[in-house]
Length: 156
View 1 (tube, rainbow, N blue to C red):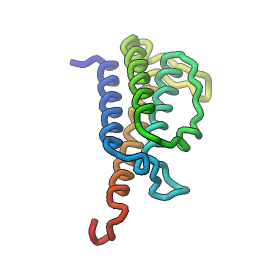
View 2: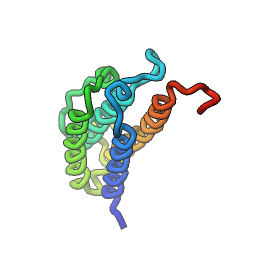
View 3: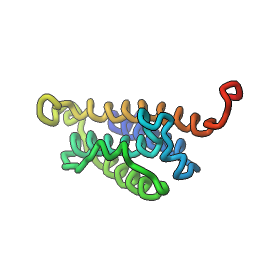
View 4: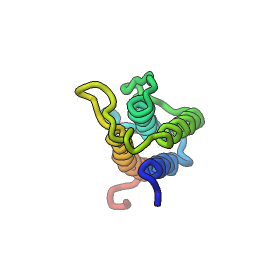
């Protein structure tokens, strides 16, 4: 039976793998495309944002590391290709694995941060998993819209 932190690590690995499955094989145009130019986000921006949230909540809030994050810039991120983002994801995944592997059950219950943003480590980890899954749904739909952007409604 998996420990609680092992389960969290598995869920995060799965979420990251699903991000890369959605992004796989897409051109820079596809990665940067927004279904509604002013009111939606590109696949690349959503992937960058998910990474930023993981680093903020797991690395900083749970792991105690200071993270320089520009949340607004995550949504403006543009892709030439996926190599840089992929390397950053791999590095962040290793950091998250190390942090989560070292947590005890008691540490999962400890409040971290200052009010009004004080949360337990467990809440922060579950928030990241929930956050990935929310944006994975948006990403899957965005990819479908990209792939069918030239189809007429009755052809979809």
